[in-house]
Image (cartoon, rainbow, N blue to C red):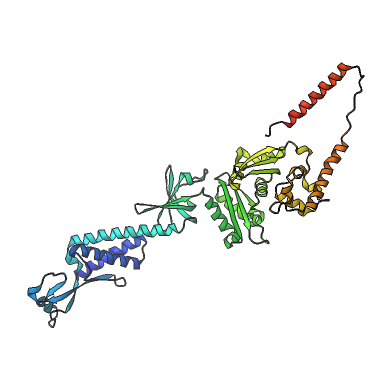
Length: 461
């Protein structure tokens, strides 16, 4: 009875350990059997002739040893053989060559064997727990998890998930305005899982672009359903972010779907990111048009792209330069990050004499104006100064030659009319022999020319 009680207590200890480590019963039985076999192998050199039976329903276990009956004088290995006389003590009709199976009580192995079993089991459980934790979170990389703040350190915050697993949120992965106390609930994305020396370390992030992506997937059903795709993301955590979205359904407005009615969808994301301002733009593979959308509300006059240097020169009106650059240069920095180009902004010196293409919608079809804007031509002078192939090539504006001639004629006429309306400059009549007067006029004229040249050569800002 005492032996049976000791066995049950041993199983109860393992069950308690199972509850602590959150390991399912089936896995525990398997680990327990392996632990028994490991100890038996250490005691007898092998476990191949032993059967270990663990009964999770009754909470006990049995160990059975299989041996072959041999003559008393031929007994060599008591682990694999049993003498005929010993076998007939178990059952009187045993004969030489038959197999005998007898139960072995683990307590008979001694206290040292039991302690060895506990240590072996603890090591296997710890290894199993670490493998389970690693496999669980390696599949969650890129997804949002929730944890409770357990301890706040200078360089990182220790969180616990609902199963008591430790999660690390480094200071470098926190939004600058994040502040936590013990017991606070934190949402973050699983950035990576490190597994050094079989010791998993789950690293979280709130500054990753993927955190913003995952938040939008939760708030916008169209993204989760695949109708809208987030093509690009650029973030300065805690300050501002820009995202480029594209819709695969012509009836779904990607920007409107992400923002929601009166900003209802984007508001929750902004709140989670500590009031980080988020700009949503419609993505296009046409880089000039994409740059225009990214710099909105600044109105782009012209865009010149250098593919080799991965740079883009953008011309803007005087009042739009500050808007395009943004406070502390954040807007132009995000635009460069989103487009993958280094964007340089310049003031358009000819802006006062130029005319927006929309002013010609009464004489030029709107679809033609839209086609010209798609290739970065927003004003009349931009069209007049553009290479003709930009207007006619299939992968650019793709306009017919006759249409291009008609557009150029209309736009040119606009500036010819402006020149015709300019008042005439009065001429000064001089005497033929008044040489000094003529020289003075030539000097004044030269001075005027110099001033004009200086204005035209002003450096772009």
